[in-house]
Image 1 (spheres, helix red, strand yellow):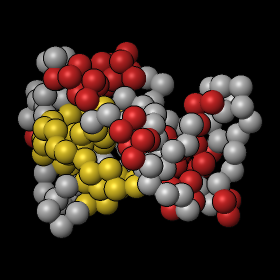
Image 2 (cartoon, rainbow, N blue to C red):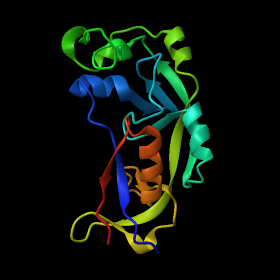
Image 3 (cartoon, helix red, strand yellow):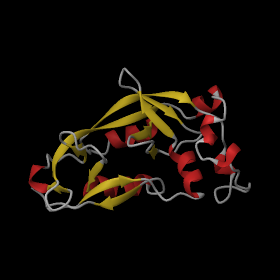
Length: 193
């Protein structure tokens, strides 16, 4: 079909290690009704972030993404389950203040040991889960790899069947994401046969 590369979405290597990872991405779980319940810091969220193995975007970023011509995704609502107020953009290297460790020094405690802040939740604006469509088959023969000839042509996709481990993008989508949110997302070339 095409000889372009495919990429797995990755979290960026953040400032402050696991602490920064928790502040940027937070945590999420699936509700019984299928909606995504998010626990993360507010009032700032990057335009795109990846709690667990999901992809969440701001309303503004979703609008730009829909206008990009890229394919293979739908948007679903996100429930803001617990959004404590943490203004980490004021901390070095983003701002002048010193980095602050969470109570108990465990990264999740930024979220779990703080109260939900309606003000911080409101500051995040509307958030959406990007639900990627199945768009390629995988093989485990001679190591895990994507099967190029099975690719549907979607720019955003997950493997068909029960092999959903990572979220994948085409080279075209990778270039667009890098140009529009390169500070907040990373990519890994995946093995294709």
